Amino acid sequence: MPKQLTLRGVPDEVAERLKALSRERNQSMNATAVELLADALGFSQRRRRLERYVTWERADQEAFDEALRAQRPVDDPAWR
Image (cartoon, rainbow, N blue to C red):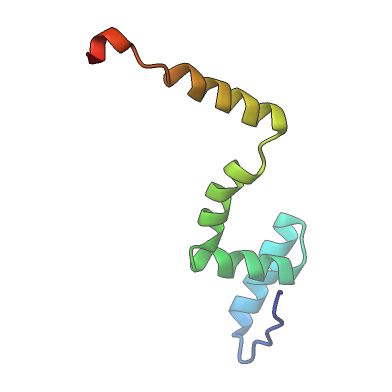
């Protein structure tokens, strides 16, 4: 479950840059701060890599399985 954090002592320059970046991205300061923290800690890259696997449709899975089946036959005479 997501946690709530309170940041204190944020320098004015950092707060202003965060505010400007949030406007550029058309998102809340909170969303921007969470993305920046996740990127800095390496979580966003990992999540993007994993999204490739969890976003498959059933047709994608079937096409993948079919491609694997095509690679599995063994040429018996070559293995004797």
